[in-house]
Length: 229
Image 1 (cartoon, helix red, strand yellow):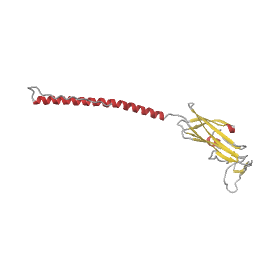
Image 2: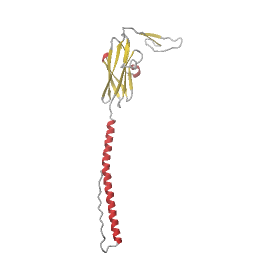
Image 3: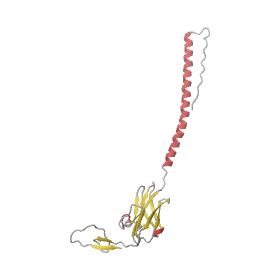
Image 4: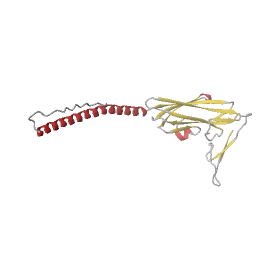
């Protein structure tokens, strides 16, 4: 706040009988009082300026606190692949009728709260699974064929036979420990190409009744084969 200070200087003739010394003392006292008055007005102006600055600072702190608001958030990617052993990197695919399609859902916690309970719903595949898993901020979870062994939870997505064109939506809902909920969804599409066909996969392993994925073994090692049709 700006204040205008008006000073009035009186010029007067000294009365008779007043010496030059007495006049000098009077002028000095007047100048001193004027200087003190100016300093006092300056302090008042500084205090008035400081009050809006303090209010502005409080407003800035409040805005920063609002920016750092704690909320849950999710990002989801839904992919399809004709490889039954690997997740794809695309959300659309063309495959022949009868092909085995591997569906995968990738979820990332993009918020600043830990998510603990989750539900995956894919109506087109008749999937509706709820499971507990600790997913801290910035952590991710891949739901596919191998989720049960890698994450220790029961939610898995297997391979599904392509009988016709498929447009599928995956919805993933997560809850925090204090019951806040967040939902994200994504779609994937598989288009048929040509007539029905049969795909045959051969796998090798060293454990009975388990389809292994070993690439090589030492001589004289007993191995077991399985076939996926």
